[in-house]
Amino acid sequence: MITKEIDRAGLPVAIISAMYPIAEQVGASRIVKAVSIPHPCGDPNLPSEADARLRREIVETALKAIHAEVKQPTLFYPNISVSV
Image (cartoon, rainbow, N blue to C red; front, side, top):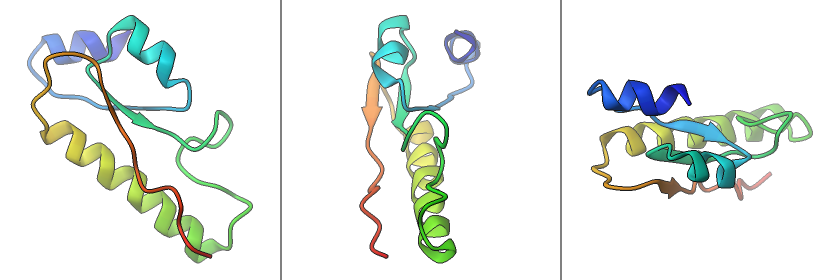
């Protein structure tokens, strides 16, 4: 997995994935739980403002993950219960 190699080179990286168990199995260090496989960073069924808040929450969680010190695969959970 490319994220492992980038991390190994000294650049912290977070992967946003709905298939987070697989990312954990292959050893990705920072994993952000996504919404779904076809729409990992949003929900097109939400009103546009709620979808924008959801997308922002996911990206902010990924940025926090990049700054976190981790020793093993770590799962980060964005607050995906955005109110409509």
